Length: 556
Image (tube, rainbow, N blue to C red; front, side):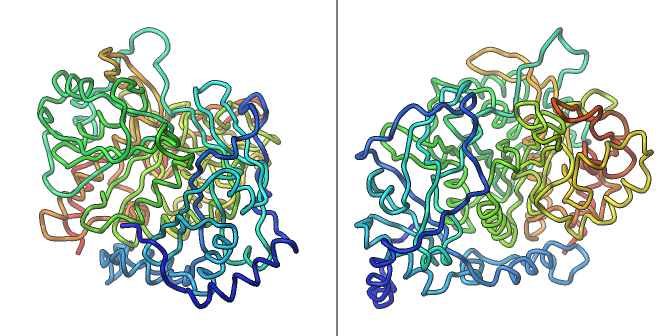
């Protein structure tokens, strides 16, 4: 649980005088590598009211990050004698705990500006404060405005810049919400055109991925929802009745808000297919609206990762399916680097994180390649999550919308080196885009894939088909939950960070060798093509539950 910061009073007193003077001296502008989005995306609609409430989260610099990374790789490597020896929440927090100097510096700056309604994680690497816009602007040298999205009915508070005193800046990774804008577009879209010969339902997916009638009874899974994406229990009950009667009567634990009168396609899809593929597994719906009438403005994705790091080992779901994402070039390096550490902290605890890659092939969410560059995706392009691309049809081929390629930010992880090298060594040159469009040494994504088209969902009492890697992500995540069940039933730990295991067991996936992903404006003539082995459209392929369950049952 959150705790009020009480310690470091002596250091705080020292820093109060120091930072009070720093308020009039040098300040460092932070996260300057991200720009305001164009007005046709987010339109500024006026200065924020000084008295409006805002929730500020300060990411305090952590320690021992190299050791954390090494630990994650060791406990996630199936060839390691330490495989599955995950750390507890307390051990993880102790490992990366900030210095007392850093915590005191942050606390002193807050006190100097009268911001004292604050909470923190147990070791103070995140400090969360509730204050007014006026106080936040003084604290951060910022000017908050309202911004409204051109398509979604979403308005947020953001600032075009912020700064910190020079002596404080070295103790902080980032502050939120400030210069980063959310991506409100759901990664799911209504299927266009006539009815397909291959509609996806739970029965068909369970047959395709060799799950059959297997259900689990151990562990916990969750899908996440952001920016007022909700589901209706009535819709879910109807879906279960029509498509997966085994789940009828199951109780979903909702963490956060859920306005059932406003169900969205994204949330409906996620909860319907996660419960149907991960059948029998306890399921939670983690919802983060961003703002609500009785809550201050906040950044929903950050609130999710904050809550993961603040939830006990016994209570936290060990599988998360998330269909949120955005192009790498819209996110600052400081932010991505710190969130990567949070992903590693989750991995060290035995938590598996799945992210949908996106639905625009090699382009960004608006179907473009800025500066004639294929777009890396975040968080799907992070080496510390399992990214899920999309397939289509039966027999399966790559879905043209499946986002995939190579990160412009993150170097290729060692667990992926051989698979990606094989792709470049074996694919015929006529199927490979010109090297000027992508980073040939970057981390490749997706890692895996699943069906992504013609998913029958029920939203607001209406049944219709949808497409998107948002379909693939909860489907694949449900398979992971069933694999965890195999291990938990045998008294073994959960799988945790999946990628080292998967890349060492590529034959346990059904290889996708046909199809390619689409291009967009300024993207050149072609995207990537599927090929034998790993490829940057479908990853290692789609899951064979029978093969995977045999493998994980034999691991320690």
